Length: 310
Image (cartoon, rainbow, N blue to C red; front, side, top):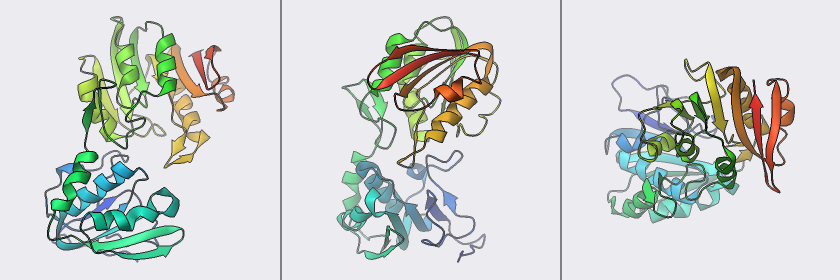
């Protein structure tokens, strides 16, 4: 069943895409997921402004508690929040976490999900710790701005570090596909011959972090799902990437393969793609028909680095 919201009703919020049979979503609900390009920003939503909200809770503990606290803060007094998650991806902890945030919780279970319904508590003081622990912050140990929930949020990914160690000085117009918080981009921009660099990512929070981590006039930022064409980006001299192979916490080899195809689409003839991948992922078969030459530059027990020329 879908609840229809009339134009004069207060807005209803939505975070992610809960299974349709597990949560009732009014038509016209406002989407706040940072992983859905074009969505609104939950942090910017006025306190006490939403008539209700449904949240498909993220799997990471700090991220999940942060999203739940933001959602409660955005609700009108006594408005309802429905939060759900698969039992093995945070659902089994939802009730306790909502109780810790000051809520009285009604809980049900369906289709391997835990579904919790609460009213916004009168006292929001219990949200402070969750909001602080999930907020963006500078990580002195890596010298970068980051946030829980972003890929490799509190450490340098070893694959990216390997790629940086073997990346040549690049030149011309390029893109960092799946840029994350900008670790690869910083290395690319160390070359003065780079004229421009597009930072492309599906995660708005990661792109926000790059505004501090990659403060360079040659940079543009594109919030996009690379399974679709990213605007008018084309005819690039180079592409650099550490493609993802998980979608919603589940391994998805097709996702990384889609990145390879997108790289080939974006490059001009004789353009170059530099790619690092986990050793077990079968990218060779995808690279071979799309590029004139494919050279494995480095192989370790865990990773492979390729240079592919279109």
